[in-house]
Length: 386
Image 1 (cartoon, helix red, strand yellow):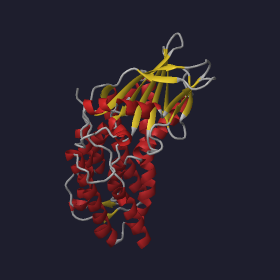
Image 2 (spheres, helix red, strand yellow):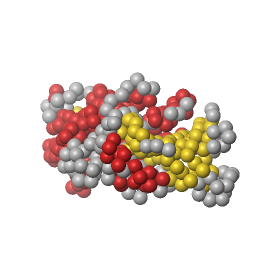
Image 3 (cartoon, rainbow, N blue to C red):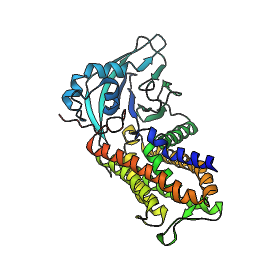
């Protein structure tokens, strides 16, 4: 039995070794003109560029337009040193035309429009390597457009080289890519993962009258209630993500990220003493709306056509649900086995919940005040003003 206790504590407190992960994504758009001319635009998060180039010169937690402009050459050298386009003769020349700034869901991005000049002709191939050497969880969201033909790709370390062509990829391949993207997004997003773990630690317990945890009989009932809670969480952030992509919802990251940390802290404290509604699926839905705002910039900047965006959104959210259910299938059997152990109900559950609440509290302070309480954490606030 002690082995189960150790495993459960390790799963719930693994986040203490990690940092609140802000998803690392860039948006690359390639446009093929009627004459065959190729041009592009690349949006890269300033928080990512700060890690590799060092944009925040005065280390005040804010990146100004002057600081970014002073590092223009370094930014372009790093970016285009990690993106290659080749034809049948050799490498093409990528030339940045200007440096601009845009915001996606409140986070600042360097915008690099560029032209593509190739020595020969024939099929073009793209090789994407941005940040993969320091962050394998980084994803490049690629859109290739030629007139009405639009193709989308999710670039990963395992899927980093593709042909540049206007024709759409197979439907099954596109669904698989965004399913995997959603799956990775939830399992690599440590704050979202910790929130789910906090919910699951009491999955096989109930609190009648709000006084003390007691075991739930029947594994089927436990699994049903768990999946209902996780589905409510997915449904909530799917609604918010869809509204954000349609431009109906916008929330700056500097407000959303602290709110996400606060939801974790409240859910963890509720495991120790009841402060939230008794029905966990209602709590998961409410907090899922907040977590959904942190996903809000994920697909919108790809500028896909309506059908392509609907497919990407559906696949992405199903991938998130699969990731959550995978975690549930790992944790729920352990919780179910331990539910009759007094030590689990009176010691392990409060201790693991307190650890999660303290970690979320540190993330909250970090994100509100821009402090560096957790070393190596990406820059939490990126503000750019002209």
